Length: 174
Image 1 (cartoon, one colour):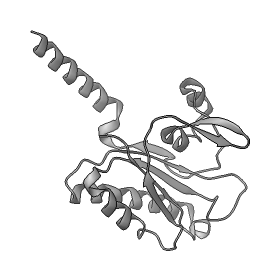
Image 2 (image 1 turned 90 degrees about the vertical axis):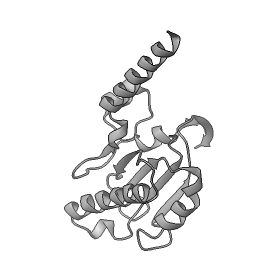
Image 3 (image 1 turned 180 degrees about the horizontal axis):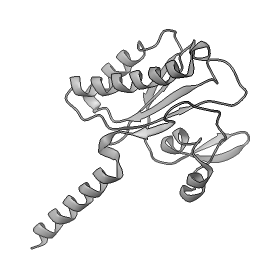
Image 4 (image 1 turned 90 degrees about the horizontal axis):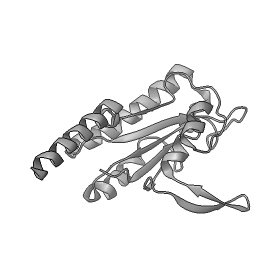
């Protein structure tokens, strides 16, 4: 299940909302993505991150959330058509095809490596950035969880998948 859809949510009135309401809004949007998956009979698989830029105000730079998720090819057009209506305003939701593969992009006069997963985790803790060799950008304060993954991408789920896959390989070799 490749992570093939990147959605960025920017509520136009997020800066006027109380921090608890901001947290609840991001949770509601994640739940809507999960409901879309359930309604269309595919597992909700994704990585999300809430971020904000310190000292900057406005819908383009205030708190927003990125969601990199899997949507089967046959549902991608419908998903893109539906998700743009989850927040008011023509630029509040940006949904597009993405993946987690690295590519080269021109940025501020130099060539940089870009990957969607690295982009959404750019405001991670400095120790995590160092260990994973991602580009890090200092973020502003966030109430509640800053990032997360769906249950089927947790370390426990991945370990179970690897174990089952190894077990399958052993049976096939015998």
